[in-house]
Image 1 (cartoon, rainbow, N blue to C red):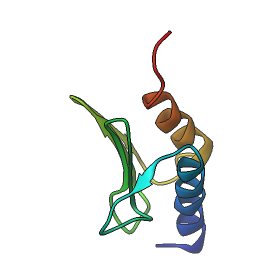
Image 2 (cartoon, rainbow, N blue to C red; image 1 turned 90 degrees about the horizontal axis):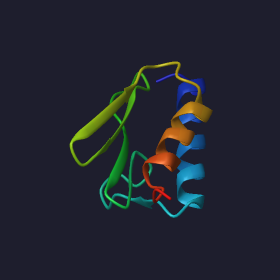
Image 3 (tube, rainbow, N blue to C red; image 1 turned 60 degrees about the horizontal axis):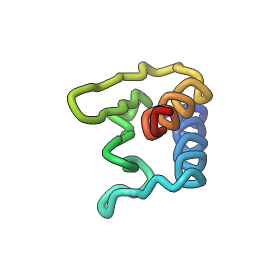
Image 4 (spheres, one colour; image 1 turned 90 degrees about the vertical axis):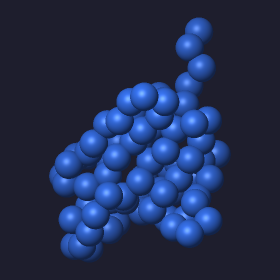
Length: 80
């Protein structure tokens, strides 16, 4: 994992924790959960995924952190 990739997923982790996402007991910086949604780093190249009930989104290496954070935050919002 490159330093940039590692920094990117740490930025995502910090943003999600600020929103109340909880780190997994075994991998608290690589797997976070909130309201049935799960964000996780998939591999050492920095690919990540977001999943919920019957859906999954994969974020390839190089996906802007703002896009990942926005998707994660939107996944836990309650529809109006």
